[in-house]
Image (cartoon, rainbow, N blue to C red; front, side):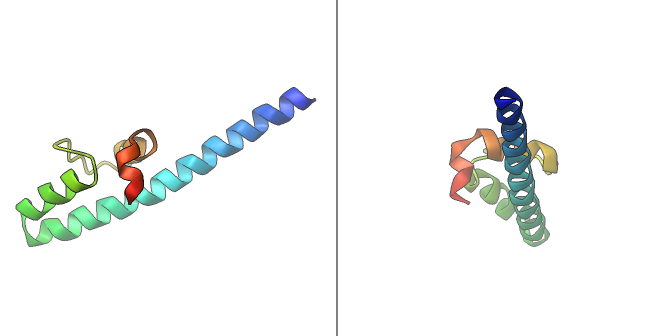
Length: 76
């Protein structure tokens, strides 16, 4: 039974990290889109400062994955 509890706990933690990553990703997407309205140069600068570099993807899932796996983005 202890083994099952540990597995369930790990799954719960993964879900929490996923939700946090998604929320942060939505924030980044919103920021990039807002700056994008002002100008493309601002958008590129924002992407670089968030640690996404030149990838600059607006896809929320991709950004969430970067946030979870890339420590540089945790500064957000």
